[in-house]
Length: 253
Image 1 (cartoon, rainbow, N blue to C red):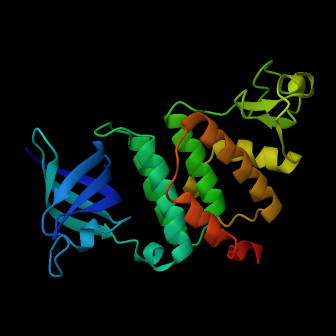
Image 2 (cartoon, rainbow, N blue to C red):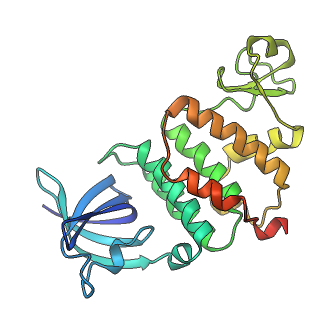
């Protein structure tokens, strides 16, 4: 069966001397692995449309096993992402998170729009750290791991939760702090921004300016939460961490 679908390349691997297995995250069918025959050949018509982060229209033959990519039409190459090492590493982490928390052939149009918008915003120069936190929160929610950020995770009190508990899955108020001795402290501003990001989409953040110290707190909380509840051993994260040590976004310079 021939199907036409819009998608974004989130993973590739070599298959033999000239072929590639390409995983598309598609609008209509979710995550779709296909074989791109001859895509590694220098003059292949599939070469440009099977590069990582490429957004395109794809014609695929789907049968009982892995599908085969027949044609591709470029919508956006996202060349700027692949030309900047830090942006490449950031996008690689985000697509790995998406890949690991979704199943093949499960339509997830909300996450498709999230991925497309996030890659576009990264390319436009929007703060990659803030975009990453929004992306993490949205993918976690879709996978059933939504941290409680608008009230105390235990008693439901909205009277200024003060610390984050990974074990309890969200903020704790003063009265419930004794239930977890390993809570993570956040400034009032960091807690406010974290709640805001949970309700925000990438296309709405604009040219945000968040202090480096605040961004560090946001990352610490979400990293601990992701590690606890997903158990993913990320291949992309160590390289991103290494790059971050020597890089700072222009908004903080």
